[in-house]
Image (cartoon, rainbow over all chains, first blue to last red; front, side, top):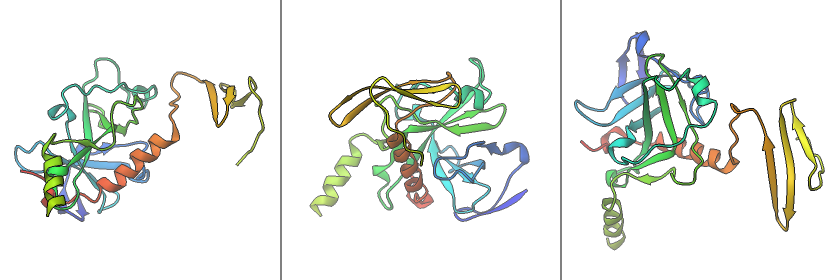
Amino acid sequence: MNVETLRFGTIEFEEDEVLLFPEGILGFEECKRYVVLQHGECSPFFWLQSLDRPEVAFLVADPAGFEPTYAPEMPPGVAQLLRLDENTPRLVYAILSIPHGKPKQMTANLAGPIVVNVAERLACQVVVEDGQWSTKHPVFVGSGGEEQSASAAA
Amino acid sequence: MLVLSRREHQSIMIGDDIEIVVLDIRGEQVRLGIRAPKDVTILRQEIYAQVQQQNVEATETRPEDVPG
């Protein structure tokens, strides 16, 4: 199957690659079907591309890569929605934001991770309310601040 | 929006299995107790709004800014 996207032109996907978000993503509730595209060969970054709206795509990555202690508590209801039990293989993605032209200021939304039931191709955005994780968690510790002070000086 | 007045220790029911109790009122703060089935998610509204706002911001991210 083919779909038009804003960022990646026409992309090809198989029906069994589609990730279904029964409740959508907050603010994008009408977008229920996504595919995962790797940003580049061997890249740790992926794009969650909507199949419903060509301009909607989220940059995501496994938060374990930059925040090894990240293990948010799953609110009740998630297991049921995603048909997860204790042994179901799952993936967690954090949605990333990069201010234009400032890749070192990349932040991760650790208050709203994406949880995926890999086998069932079901996913949802979980809102974590333990106060520990922010929606703008710096990905590159230190470097973001340096760049900020550099641009402030200029 | 339905508007109800409640005093301390009074409650409201939402459906037949969710109860919200006004525990106490101190100045500008109201403490609420919530009884609900385990699979019902209860969160402060602000955190939802923050996550939603961040999602909108995230869609501005451009492929050419991604490292590597």
